[in-house]
Amino acid sequence: PQRQRGVVTGRVWSFRDVSARVHAERERERLLRDAHEAIQVRDDFLSIASHELKTPLTPLRLHLQVLKHALESGQPVTPERVDKALGQVRRLSALVNDLLDASCVGAGRMELQRTPMSLPELVREVFSDFRATSTQHLLTYEGPDEDLLVSGDRGRLVQVLANLLENAIKYSPLGGAVRVTLIRSEGDAVVSVVDSGIGIPKEEQAHLFERFFRARNAPVSGFGGLGLGLYICRDIIERHGGHIWVESELGRGSAFHVSLPVLATRSVHEAHV
Ligand code: ADP
Image (cartoon, rainbow, N blue to C red; front, side):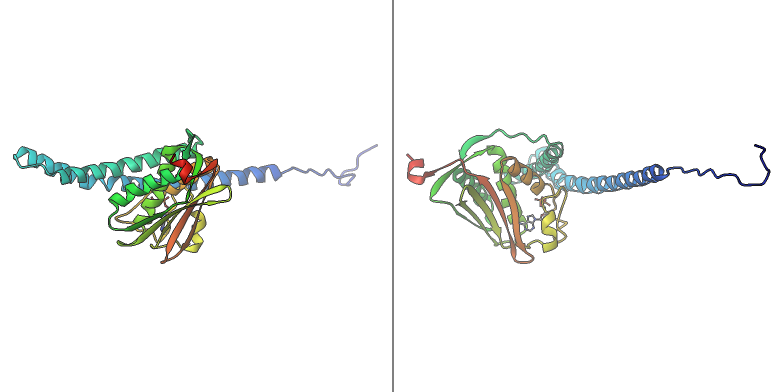
């Protein structure tokens, strides 16, 4: 058939699927946003971490300079000065250990060496160490009248309790009361560390166990922190099959609770045979 010019004999519809392109574009935007956030988090972290690591260095340098001067001029070196320098070294190593532990937690590489152990014995031990050194707070302990055996990594459980006690002291006024209790609740042992300190705003309580989280009422100077302690504690406790949670009221105080499954109980009489 002969084609007539200018007469429409049919139509060709051309569809191009752009949804893949739109999707790729959105994905690219999301990746850019994530990368931007990651850079922001990294920068915040670097500035907090370097500030925290630098803080003990200034007094440490000062103590060492005084000691050097004393040695050079034949003056006596006071043990208090050495203790103060050591205190700053301890603070530095605690920060570095938190950083190392947090990177293990993040990579899922926190390993536990668990053995059966008496939880009341362990809690009493940590409590006694704290009571001996924290003379400016009123520390009390109340334990169960039976022995509670748990399967735990001793060092890691000590770390958790020490962290909760340190926080209770750090976020309480001088002379404040800190109460430690250990009870059995059905199949679990529950350790609580209760303080009458600054408390935590309600809306922030859900975030306390996240990495680098510090509540807005946490003091920024003096008792700074990296916001890693509770993040590490939660990982340790959950790897033990337990739970960690908080109850707190702003300006009134906080209670941190840790529960661990009990392996067996023994009457105190039996435990001491
Ligand atoms: P750090 O104390 O080093 O900042 P943590 O992970 O131990 O880090 O605690 C996270 C945050 O939780 C703290 O910065 C503080 O805001 C809050 N917090 C923890 N324990 C207490 C407490 N006992 N009382 C009030 N606030 C607390």
